[in-house]
Amino acid sequence: MDIIIAGDGEVGFNLAEALVDSNHNITVIDPHEELLKRIESHADLLTVVGESNSVSVLRQAHVDKADLLVSVLHDEHINILTAILAKKLGAKRVIARVNTLEKVEPNIRKVYEELGIDVLISPEDIAGHEVVSLLHQTVATDIVTFSHGKLSVYLFKIREGAPVAGKTLNQIAKEHKHLDFRAVAIHRDSHTIIPKGENRFEEGDLVYVISKPEAVDELANLSGIVKKEINNIFLVGGGRVGKVIAMNMEKEMNIKLIEKDHDRCMALSNILDDTLIINGDARDINLLEEEGIEGIDAFIAVTDSSETNIVSCLHAKKFGIPKTIALVENLDYIEISQSIGIDTIINKKKIAASYIIKHSMGTEVSALRQLIGMNAEVLEMIAHEGSPITKKPISAQKMPEGAIIGGIIRGHESFIATGDFQIQPQDKVVVFALPGIATKIEKLFHKSRFLI
Image 1 (cartoon, helix red, strand yellow):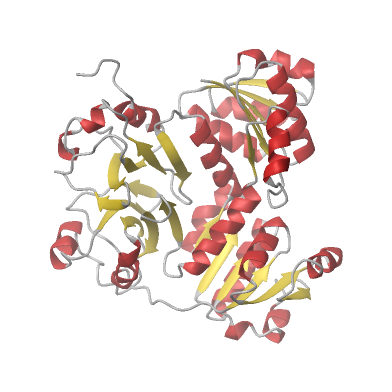
Image 2 (image 1 turned 180 degrees about the horizontal axis):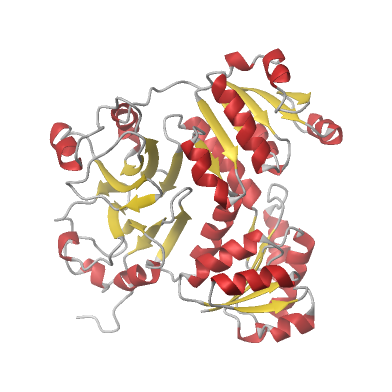
């Protein structure tokens, strides 16, 4: 597929790297020549220096031959104009990043569609809703749900003294035969392992497990995690992400929102009815103590500064806050943030890349998510009639190295994958994959040219 990415910084850079791994032909448009030189040195792609809302620049990028154009600049007005121009100039499909979708009613969305924009995406909205999901499911540090929760992938950190520490997957399965789950990834010492039966869990491991919702609490107990109800929240940052969280949670939980900008505090006070808004700096420990941080169940930092979010979450940990969530935009900070004790990391670049990569793939891929803190992704694939995946049991399939089938959704039922399971047409199959092999997995779900 020929893809054009219009960006103005790291979001475009990260997306380009992710799509290059998927074996597409990528052209990046960016006004910053130095950044484009850095991109060229890291990936095999073409670059065009210039403004993406320029017809001449789009033509220089051969927009008329593009299967997909994605505009992810920080300015939503440029993204919308870029997408409209690209469609008029011949791009088959266009995606535009916008600041928020909360005010885009169906009738307004139809206007954008009539102008030629196929998809609108707001990473801020998605990030906010991910935090809301984590507040509803308190034991996991990351959650990826499929088919409205019929199956979910949970991230657990193996705590000191956890019942599973030092045991192999085979031992755990034998001791807990009633527990329906499958471990699909272990992250240890900066490396991601696709586990087999003889692999052991160690204290400090980050483990992705696929399971049905009813098993999550017991899985958390085995990981050494104690469930705690969340009723009182400190929310740091009143930008778009913070606003989404507060609007969705203020009727359910007690929220204290700390925002440094006075004007933004005033604007939030006109929107939020049941949130206590505090004008101040969350890095100020005295302020945190004055506002009662010791009685807080969860501390969420989603300012525009990764450093502020990390530091304020570390302060919260010193006060014994059981759950901390930080928005970390610098990809280099993610792993170290997890290693120093922050429970959950949210990253808008990964969110945007996941959403857009899914749109760059075939109809076999119904959902895709890049995993935070791991160089890997989890996909929901649809098995088409006559595809190779439907012709043999899972144990007889030639899965690409670095891929594992975790679970299957068939109608209203869900199943954890076992070797003798036979995938049927229209099944939705959850697959965990290391980088660069998604296109190989797709081939297993393609409809064969000739049906037998």
